[in-house]
Image 1 (tube, helix red, strand yellow):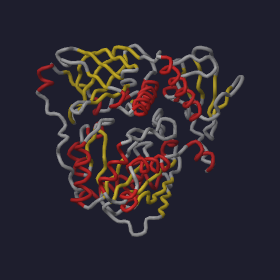
Image 2: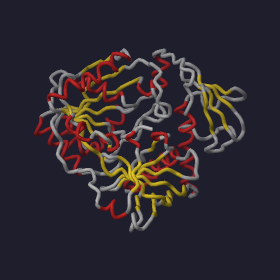
Image 3: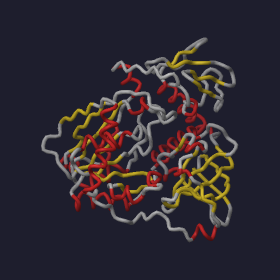
Image 4: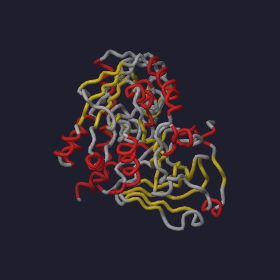
Length: 424
């Protein structure tokens, strides 16, 4: 097992005395001696995938500016580094990226962020990079890898934050990274990569547009479909295990309606309840081996699941409840064992109650406070997990009884947030 996954036993008293990640520490301008290191770590991967980076509408743009990036895999960071060469940048990096390498990442320009938590400190840190360092800030607003090759949720707060900065905004939209190593099976397939780097806003445009108009343009810019891109560009994937792991995202059978009984191996997906099977071809399409092919396109299958979750919420029947194993990501040393807890997720959001010695009060997260929910599949080989963060702590929660449920939890979290936002 990766050493970053090491689980530390701890008593409640020891846990309260731990040094936690310092979220107040200001960002460091990327150290000059580390710039060649970032290039050496990035360019070989870029060349390996025959990456093409097309730039347009960037005439006259130079730092400081904000770079908004799509997010489909770890290779994103390497393509971003290549696209910005030779400029310096500070990257917003999720908290688990700092395990075992906090000092290195901070000196290389990393800015620590808890996922799906409103953070005024981050705004202050980004302003320091833009106004003080006069460099680029690279942001991945989807905050998680794409699950099925289409965009993740973009927070409403992004437009407001960009208007505060009063600098140009550039978009880096990448293709092929999801197809090469989808989050549900990270084995590389050797796909080519393309990227488009374009101006999204000038500073003057940001000043003129209201927040709603800024967000509309961002969401339009983030429209992508990797399976359509694969088909249009004739990207053939003959990787024998190309569907293995797909059941973690595609968890519901459209033939019998059963959830969490899907299985996958090789190029096939199978329902363990009714036995129906589908096969993924070399062009990313699904074909039923018997009967009707309900969803040749995987994004459409995922939307079918979303629609069914919406119906459950409408009917008041959506509910997840289970015991979970709790791991706290307190600092760069890794994860601390806080025992087990009970989690309920329903129309009222999340409620977690655990050992009172670790959790004197329940951890409560209302729908309005979470526009999405970060999930992991077979995280470090320890199982599927979902993440809850407060301003001071980040918990990785592993369901102990429910199987293959984290994708549905994410879908429900996003839908419940949208409904609360619509009421506001």
